[in-house]
Length: 312
Length: 207
Image 1: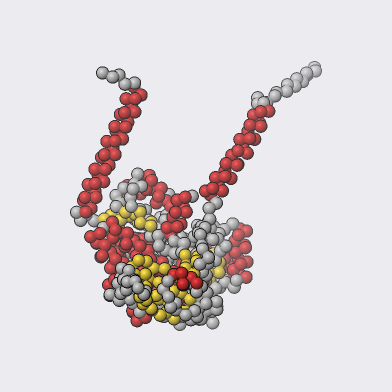
Image 2: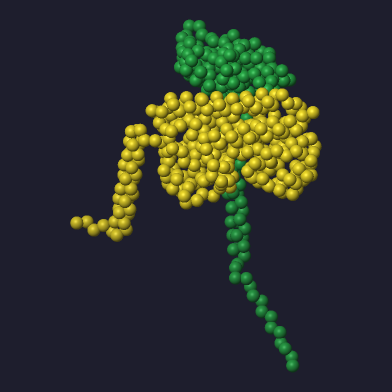
């Protein structure tokens, strides 16, 4: 009988264990696939609030939706928690923004060992624009705060879910289209109201560089953004410069943040005399199928009131 | 009583070579960091845009950029409308579906009130068809014209090979008589190239 050196035996044991683990994982994966094919519901993870609404309206009762993080956390500076890892392990697919607004999701996936979870990049077919109102040429990741880009993401998510769950692909497509029509009607409702207003004096700044897509939908421009970079407050010198810029550009409306209110907006208002309104970043509150529509309605209402306030 | 003061000079426990080595290590580190940043860290969103193309990201501006984004979504919807209804949608369908950039509302007005026409083209000698949506006659100064081309295998068939969006700097340019891409290019049309989310994901993954 061959006497193997002790280290070789240890290596063989480790290899055998790895092989067994791999085999067990393959069997488990195969069983899960088989179960899924037999009509089990998909479990779809989402990273941001709007994606909960999008997926809920696409899948109806044909899939379960699992937010990767609890409601009430700020997705800008989120740090993964142990429970997030547990949730990630239960997913059949994960819908992500993927262009800079949910990088933490990839940390959670990595930590959960679930890097094989199929990812649905909602923005795959969205044509991106730079952050408006700044000299920053980086990508605006807030495609989820607009009806046009929301519709495009809804189509993309419906397509990808249909590939994962072919039996319900047609339903997902139809539901997605119905939802898209509802979003377009919401926009049309406010467009009709805004069209009655004189917007010739409307000069807007926003605290956060998130609202380029929604303003673009209405043919409106953002003259300045207060934050120098995504989620970063300006220094005293940058703030002084921004206040000068606001005065020079004749900005008369400032959109603060519905969910992340701060003293900074008040300071700017005091210094420049701009009228204050707020936009919803659609990243707070309880997850719900109607959240996106509710928050978009809030945003459009604020936009209408802001234009009204500047009308001659 | 006198006190004697003793002075002892203590030499540092390193020799001059260690100082030189430390400096060399520092220079090497700085060089390596610079090379890494040059290779991976400072990558911009650069896309290759050919002469006959224009970027949707930083080529088109203002209203044209907005119309392009709407048209991109509309291309999907037009495909579905054809798939479910069996014909290529025209103006009334767009008004019913409140589908931008065709739907005539305030956004449409602010974006230059482009007039849209539908043209179905059957290529001679081939069982192939193209459906063209042409938008021109814009009211904003310097505004161009748009062309959405849907390419399908058989005339009147909804089996789509793909769609593309083209822009022309002259908003009053006529609808192209030809459907050949080469001919469209010769008439000054530029294909609009988007910077898609998937391009950004790829860039982020490379970084």
